[in-house]
Image 1 (cartoon, chains in turn blue, purple):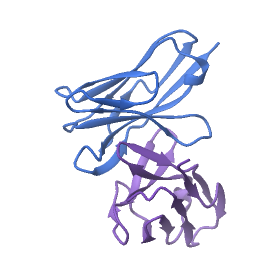
Image 2: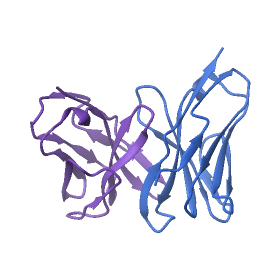
Image 3: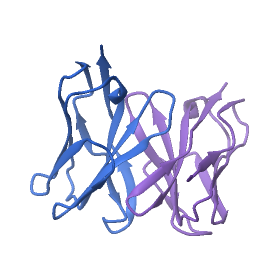
Length: 112
Length: 110
C-alpha cells in the first residue's frame, strides 16, 4: 500500500522553506526519501530508521515519528537546484527486506 | 560509478505485440525491481526479484511478467501490449539503504 504524501505540489521562491510529509497506515521501520529532477532518474536522498538513525548524504533534514507512522522532509533556504519531485518510500532492507513502495510524489518548484 | 542501464530510452510498439524491456546493473546487487511511473500516480511496483530465478509480484503485475536468468539482468515482458501500458518504466537495484534507478524507458503502445 502506497504511503500518502502531502502536499501534492508546492511553489517556492529561492530562500524559502518547505516541508513535505509522508504517512503510512502500516507500522514503519524505515522511511526513504528520493528526489527526481525532470527527465532524470530518482536519486536517493536519505533513509530514516526506527530508533532515530539517519543515513544520507544531502544537506536536507528529515524527521521520523514512529508512533504516528509519519515522516517529514525539511528543505530550508531552498535553492533552484531543489526543484523536482520528491518521493517517500516505505519497506526495504531495514523493514524485513520487503520491496520499496513509493508515494505519489510531491512536485517542488523553486523560482527565482 | 554505479550503473543501472535500461536498453531503450524510447519505444513505440503496436497493440498486441510482445515487448521486452531490459535492465542490467553492474553493481552485483541481489535485489532488482521494475516500477511504472504515471503522472499523479507516482512509482508503482510491478515485479521484483531478490535472487536469480526468483520473482515476486508487486502491486500491479497484471499484464506483465519478468525474467531473471542472471544476477545482473532483469527483464520485464509485456506479453501482449495494450494502450493502457503506455507509460514510463523504471528499473532499480539496491544495496543497503540506497536504490539505484535506470534512466527509464518511455513506452508508447499504439
